Length: 115
Image (cartoon, rainbow, N blue to C red; front, side, top):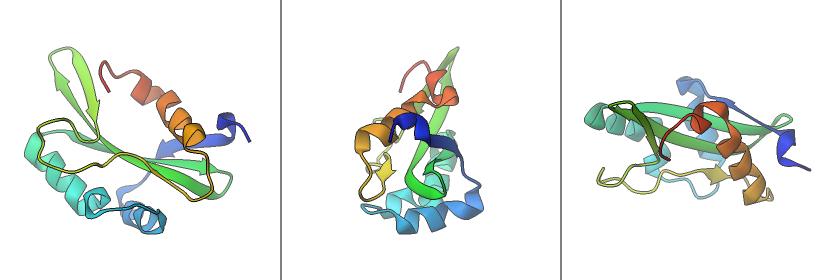
């Protein structure tokens, strides 16, 4: 299958931890509670993304965005935030390149000045 078969969209916060629970490689740093703590501490808006192939969730990715003057900066997390890796989690038996490619093609992420 091609990356175009994967649809990326935002996740409602009340569904986030359910998706985290089914992903291999998950950590406490992917949980909504931790992401909200980072959001409150650093003033960065949390964005919760899922990648779906049909009815199957093949990946999730929490990221934070901040503005520094005219620049929109996205991180998962950003350096110096004293938190561990929060990057994408990919489902089993799904090519990483396809899922990450779909995430990187997501329009709001493409509008960032620095990722």
